[in-house]
Image (cartoon, rainbow, N blue to C red; front, top):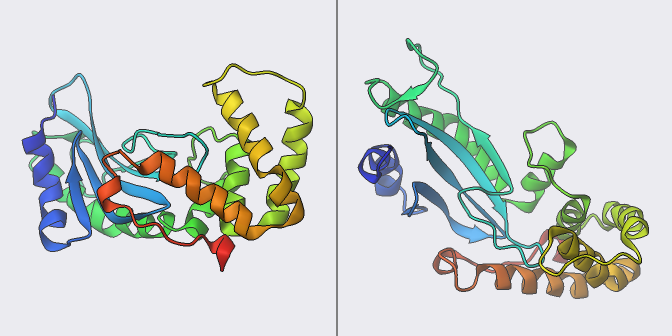
Length: 227
């Protein structure tokens, strides 16, 4: 199995030369500071002890009652090898693998994480052209609110509210969380009350981050909604 010592050989150049990177537990390199979206690199392992796979990961933190594992994220993109090699796989036994991983992270993953670490960049993932997770419309609505695109958020609200009105979902279920998001933003979204919407999102983000491993690196900042 891939171990911490092996992963550190990939992460070491970033953590040493740039104070904006922090090596976390479970083979994750975190981009700091954390503002609304946590971003980083995750090194996945497999049952083959010689095999590993790096991915770039972004995780939106401002949904209601949503403490997602940072290494899983709400967006994840596997990183492919670019250098000439006898195999397309990432293998520890390949002497070029570590250098290749560092190069792919530097030239491809880091610029993407700089973009996806902003609300504006993250919202660009919603057009379906990227490998996005199976995102419910209720969460996409919240991203539009955070970005200040209230017209797009209202369109989703009206569509989903008509589908979920009058239905009961078990507390703790995903459908219940989505229903609560619709109910909570209904009045301020209809009224265009940006300060009220911003407070809702700030409260949700704080509840999701406080008490977690992200909290020491988290910086609460205004949403584009508030500009």
